[in-house]
Amino acid sequence: MPTRDLLVIGAGVIGAACAYYAAKAGLTVTVVDRGPVAGGTTGAGEGNLLVSDKEPGAELDLALLSLRLWGELAGEYGDEVEYEAKGGLIVAASAPGLAALEDLAAHQRAAGVRADAVAAADLHHLEPHLAPGLAGGVFYPQDAQVQPMLAAAHLLRAARDRYGARLRTGVTVTGVICAGGRVTGVRTDRGDIMAGAVVNAAGTWGGEIAALAGVRVPVLPRRGFILVTEPLPPMIRHKVYAAEYVGNVASDSAGLETSPVVEGTKSGTVLIGASRERVGFDRTLSLPVLRRLAAQAIALFPALADVAAIRTYCGFRPYCPDHLPVIGPDPRAPGLLHACGHEGAGIGLAAATGHLLAQALTGADPDLDLTPFRPDRFAEVTS
Image 1 (cartoon, rainbow, N blue to C red):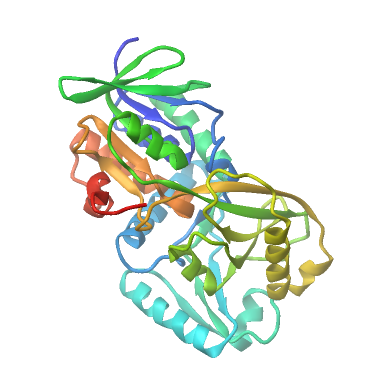
Image 2 (tube, one colour):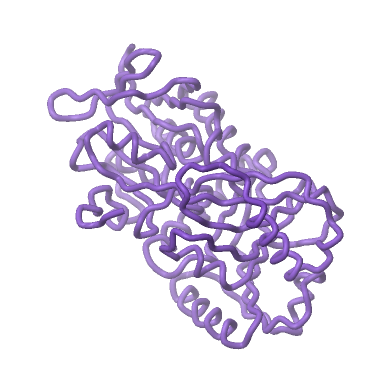
């Protein structure tokens, strides 16, 4: 096949953003995926665009850049991807929990995040159906949401229709082609595809793609379940979650962790999470986990006790040991770039990831230093 400037492996929201920004920058792009668009982690996500759950540092800087870029994308595709600048509310049940939350918020403000303290008496002005007796909270007006499958689909459609990108689904990558000491394409079950550069945007399977090129990127699956309620009249105005959620996001535990995360959607359904556990790619339905999620959501919003859950689904977050994604060129395999390992923040970080990779590919000055996300940083880390 004729050589393209860039081959992107993965048609989830990360791969879609990489394709969109690279094609917009003038590169010829092909995207391949062994399944359908958004058939992996993207299709099992809630669509969160968050700064509220991130401690100051490289990931928060990436999230702030991405939030700005998502705002620009919303100007073009907002209705199509169900973009909602709804804001996020973190609540604390106890005075010590509130003190820790306010301390985190102070550090986030210093990094450029808007974080407004909310007294216990004022919580019901934001969320009338919240349980009584909470100690207080912090409101994050920058938090937003998209419908993740729509976001991936529309970014890929724009990359194709506006900028000439190509999409090939049902194509499994089986090997990486190297010539002259650099990656020059991939082998697939549908034939070889040559490219000037290859982006590994394979999500939870990013480690497997990296291994085909002879490099190690320790991406592991971290399973999570989501409950979906019957459609309701408008009831929950923001993304609402307990302060414990922030700790669970940053945890290294392989065991089960849950904390209540509740938010409404434009369709009227309410999404309830969040659970985390490392069980490989086991998709077995866990009733104990679902019961725990339901109980925690009801404790936060008692009115949900009489609401029916109509379905549940699970997905696998692409987890890295240091909780940072892998973004950028791999010096161990010239011609290979990575865009994977975003764990549960991939939807929110997708825009910045694609934008920064396009800058790296075209030699533009980067808007953010990619050093903290470098692919070869795991030399001394074991999984």
